Length: 168
Image 1 (spheres, rainbow, N blue to C red):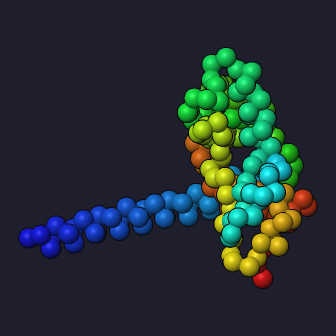
Image 2 (image 1 turned 90 degrees about the horizontal axis):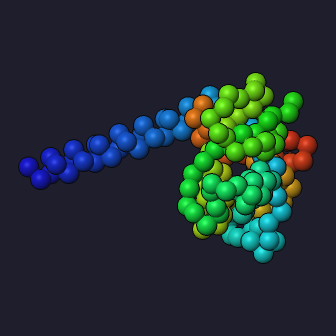
Image 3 (image 1 turned 180 degrees about the horizontal axis):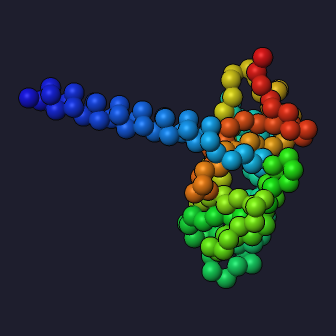
């Protein structure tokens, strides 16, 4: 009887994991593309092992907007959304904190989180293959896939000319 329960639980866990994987793959295939410009980070934390610490211009601009906003502070843990406008190359530029109003045709909502006085869009790190750190020193943009709900998945890193950085 116990073995049937254990096998049943393992099957449930596998089903949930597979559903999560399939939904993320669909998000990557069907999500809208937005490129967010990277902001400089402390060079000591830029490359730590096999990952790169990330910070985005949009987060810096949101930081300023939150500091001047009376309804949210950076000290409070909260989630929210911003609105970015897309240029012809799909580079997103911070416009405002989302307040529920309709978006223009070239605008997207992006989810953000504030934790411990830090703003995060999906992730604050990009992991790469061991020994390829030099390639990613040229990274100037993160490519995200955005769902209709504003959920972000970091897909790849790009150069200033919006050329994808790939390991050959």
